[in-house]
Image (spheres, rainbow, N blue to C red):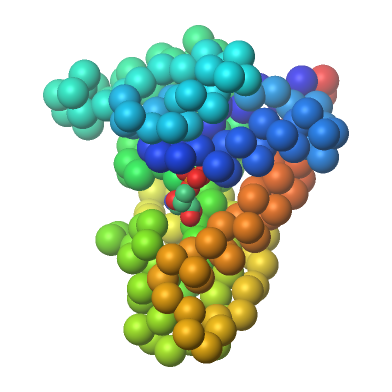
Length: 201
Ligand code: GRF
């Protein structure tokens, strides 16, 4: 069984897609054993609690500096015997120590076709505003491995959506979010399969 830790900061709909994917059998041999939220107000917390998943809060109110955040993160992940970390709308940069400890075992979902409209400052609605401002005819979502950069790790899966006449950022965000929920499930199942082989059980 592969233990997944999901890191969240907001609504948690991608996390919900993973939870539902496990229940439906679209994701095999895995369980979400921990949810960590960077915000005390994230609706993702309620979703996790409804699913009976342990939740920990790592917010700026609790932590004073990045070193402490890294240390605390590693402790929580270790306590939960984490095999795979999924960033699902998580708005904090993962400390280098954590990336090193979980090399090729951290994945992130980003609401654009990386390498376009990504990197520092490109998150949430700003991504879709950037796509519209650029006049792109298509957008989409990407799941990638997390490395020391921001949205720079090896791409696992991408799926496109059209940008339609009259789209505003919210309409485009909703169209992309539907695709996020699909590819996050496929990517988690694929990576779990790889880790399951490696782990040997
Ligand atoms: C999604 O577009 C995600 O890519 C972005 O925040 C939006 C909401 O994510 N980071 P979720 O509902 O919290 O999973």
